[in-house]
Image (cartoon, rainbow, N blue to C red; front, side):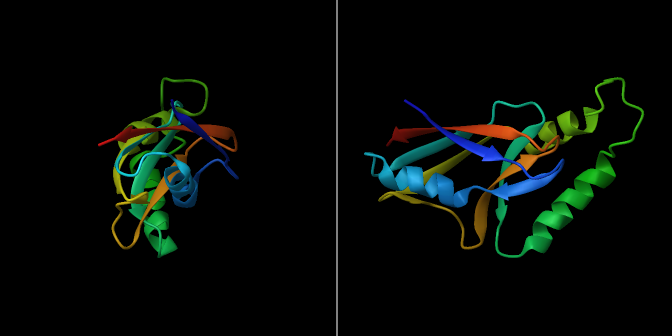
Length: 132
């Protein structure tokens, strides 16, 4: 069995903190300890774990991705979202997090972010808990 988290992203590029939603599912599950696998089934949206205390970190990540992969480059993909596909490949589409006693094992400042690169859209994150 897996869970689905739905997120409506607010704009074309957005980093949405989903940590609390993931924590709620882990806390309500029947599994005390194990592995939490997150997967984003979209080609223009990814997932990352990074600092969620200081928003300037996310701004820096976004600004660097925009410099590396500008939206107005000469791409052969003609739908107008080639940059979103490339950014998603750089960020990735999955994350794996341990949990113990129904608590995610994250660093002090770490959070889980859905990384939208072609919004606004409704996105899904699939979450699977594996007992260990």
